[in-house]
Image (tube, rainbow, N blue to C red; front, side, top):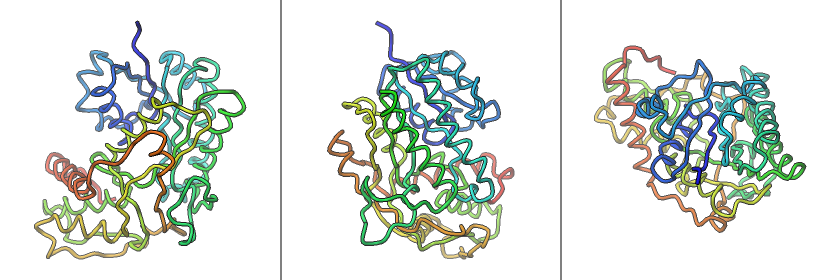
Length: 339
């Protein structure tokens, strides 16, 4: 009997690479990962031998903005399962590049689902939206459940509203098994340095190695976030497609530790032997014009459906994130910019 085949868009990202790790360890599936020809491969470096040997892991090249490349990748993968994770995923960047964000995230999702409709119509498909779709939520609506109205606070968030609705449309209109998720803040090793907690960790690591002055530059520290570990997130995604997958279903997923961004910063600083020397300075370039400032999920629907619960403690997640940046800075610190 042939092994199940899985297609992961965005496999070179934090979530995609951790999902590949999870599936290699916990499922006997052949994995096909979509990446752009110019995508950094750092997050897959530890899997290079398997990729080169095509040992259950192969890369396919394509771009969400190129219809033919997406079609060809789907034809090559012939997937039973799909995790559509690829996106322009940074809210702050979307203010500078709104049209690129919209095309990549909304039209890119249409391209993926159209190719699957034509060439893998029986696949079980996860479309990854974002908690950012809820945007500016009144405090009385916390915790945020699936039926909370959308009030997106960035072009990125608007694009993810489109992604969410496109996924649900393909399930309803074409009978495809598509499910969408709104994952709340999730982080850990390999988190990109354009995200707040990761740039804090990177700056602390650079300070510890005397590469920059002892100043951590920050944006808005008052936003409330609920933090999950990326390794718990990919476990959730696996359960999503394997435990009674329900066409058209949509779920909020997230952690249990809610705190301000300032609390996250202070936790990271508490791990550093240099903490007494480090100053914090607001950088206006790191502020969004508006912010999704209350991000606390109600995950009861997903937990009831799958039995999933987050397992990795908040402190472990942030310590692992800082240690990730410490190891990268120690190995190649001179080449880093303080983004």
